[in-house]
Image (cartoon, rainbow, N blue to C red):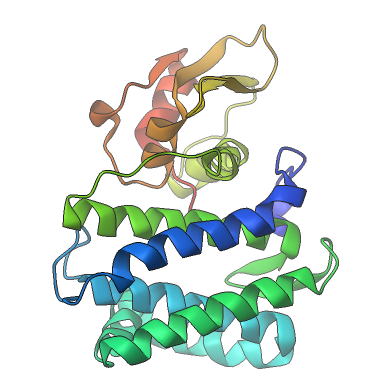
Amino acid sequence: MLDYGLDLSAVEHDLALPDLVAEGDELDALVSAQIDWTKSTPAAGWTIAHQIAHLASADANVLVAVRTPDAFGAVLKKAEAAGSQYADLDAAAGAAKPRSVLLEQWRAGRTEVVAALRGIPLDHGFPWYGSRLTAALMVPLRLMETWAHGQDIFDALGVSRRPTGRLHHVASLGVIGRELSFHAAQLPVPSEPFRVELTGPDGPTWAWGPEDAVQRVQGSALDFCLRVTRRRSRTETDLTAVGEDAQKWLDIARVFL
């Protein structure tokens, strides 16, 4: 199932790669200025080092999938063997490395991922966890994950984060991943169309879906992104929903594939 059957027409491909670079650079500026990476983040048991290690490991796996797809089976076997502890164990292994080593590993991996994804057609398929992806989806996915784990670090440090237009990529993934939210919750996927209207960081309205849809979600783009990445509970956001299915979606929303 290529790209999980998602409609990627709302993804701004021309902006996605440079925005991915910018997202990584912003987080890099924050963490490179922090000497102590042992500070706890909102993710249980995860320090700043765990968060960066997770991003670095994911980048390494992207490179395996794109460059040597036949070898990606070994990555899957490792994940299957560890089960639900895979992410924690993987992050812990990376976090045990010296801060300088981990920082350089993450920096190098980010650069290589951008080069690798730039070097293949948008519709070129490669293996991933449980499916096959293309660069068209992987680029915004890496941006989303960088932003989400970066949010954990910003929160841990108590640093205010200025939202940018790069959130449009994350919001788009949240919208097109609505069906995945219902699948993950083992609930029937609504057949009705949804209308999503979000206020972007600089004031414009970002909209998806037919204007006359009964199921509607509205609010700030920042809060929507925080919700679909599960960085905030629904009650911590300004999001509103009209329609039973829209209400349910905000309760179970997720963007992780």
